[in-house]
Length: 258
Ligand SMILES: [Mg+2]
Image: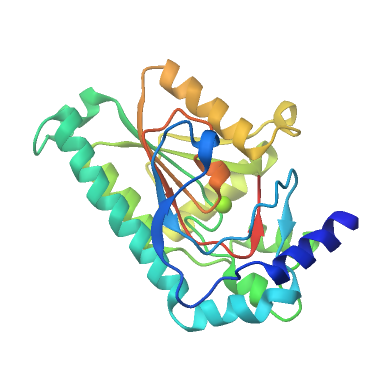
């Protein structure tokens, strides 16, 4: 309760997501382990949070304004277009100029992508007055089960482009292993298929921070010989902790998952 109260107070004082948010280089200090990260600056202040928190109704109007001003979509487009340019130059440099699919496969080039608020958008769910940017577990579980959050088409297209070049795509999510079938069905429904692997949290990983869980799996992928050119997600924890050449951070002013 105290933590929530403190979060609410700091959120009021913080720079809230503005219509003028921008896609910029992000400085996460030592946690980035030297990995360049570029992305939207529309995010909740991290506070040094060690657990998940939601924005809540106190800044709901500002999040809605960010969305309705077009800023949210502009950042999604901006991050994805920068990621696409980066993929092209990474492949030119690492696998040969205008590398063929066979050459790219030989490079063992990989992208790791998050799912929620990366490939599907929870904005409409959270903006619903009945939810009002709060965590409502029953409603969230039902939306996940029904795959009601719509696709974020730009990210779907980005990953499809990478696949068309021969890049292996791994989906890595904080969702639980028990949600595997639901999650695969949802990816099918939004038209994203052909991923090499779907990594979900095992029961043994339940207590790990998102950053430790995700960077740990990236390390294993690297140890298996993959070259992770980039990680894309809506949370800094999708890309901090190393074992990726770059991070692309989509906007998410709604909740923080450290
Ligand atoms: Mg996410």
